[in-house]
Image (cartoon, rainbow, N blue to C red; front, side, top):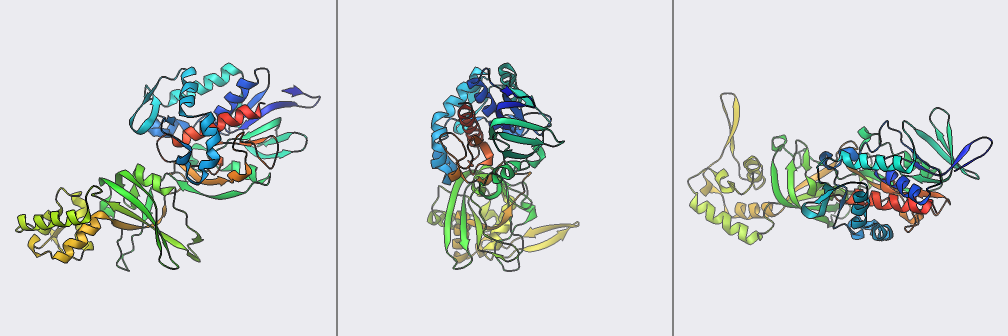
Length: 444
């Protein structure tokens, strides 16, 4: 940091006091013990979104995280992920006083289960290092001549030799995430790939006019262990492509599907075209209720149950196979018609005897249990999303240093970049790895 007759010029200014921004400021100041580092945060508290992660428990990394977990951005993430791998992140937080525990599938949490301790530890470190933290600092623009000038709401300007853009994406607008970083990056010539909500529930089509599988609100609250696959269907030639699949607990909502496995697949939903002029593709979510069974084995199981339970109503066929609230929908899908009656003002579904189900209907039911498809209308919005997919084009950023290739002295890290990972600490691992990398190199 140096002073002129008219202003103070910081060595490094970090825009954004979330996970990647706090880590960037800590790393930069660790390299510049005598230098000036300032952290600018638009909220009145640091790490507001970080406090909400992992249902408040803060799953701050994952021991299994690898570059390949970041999809099309895997190659870009490799240098930072190797330099600041999950073990390194754990060691950084251990040095800040965070006792950790590793849970299922490599998820790492504070041992207390209180995610707030992660933010508190980082704030203590910032204070210990004497990083200047300015809250309620809304950045309106960033420019460069012989130095960077950061214009704040209210008219004040912060000057710095280096700037790190770490203000996140648009996911979690309720935590103050506005997507400002994209505007700042664009002002220096950066391209921003189409952004969209990710790690989010999906909405399924509910119109039954064309006879295809449609969503029913009465399924809300149903949970089922299953394999879930995402299929992209071209509306030009009908070609189908399995984009991704995952296993886990599927949660049925009043408008679609949720659950961690569904969140992971939501990252891959990229509609081209638009609703007004017509999309170029549609997406189908396929639920396999019996992933360890073959279709033939399911058919023979159903055939045996038809014989053994012949005198029961048809819904007994799927008793204990799937959640009872899904049985009506499955039977209707294979053309087996029940009768709705009203008893004491309450509608109830009654079914003919199980023995009346045909072999063809059993075969269709076996196929359905292996792959019940629902058309995706879209995802829930930004406030429901955990991360942003899309962002600043990674080809315009040096993967080793996080420095912009278009503007010397400008660094970008975290969610503002076109990098996103699956649930389970992968996105915080990237935030900390890229933030630390940006901070270290900005301080050089």
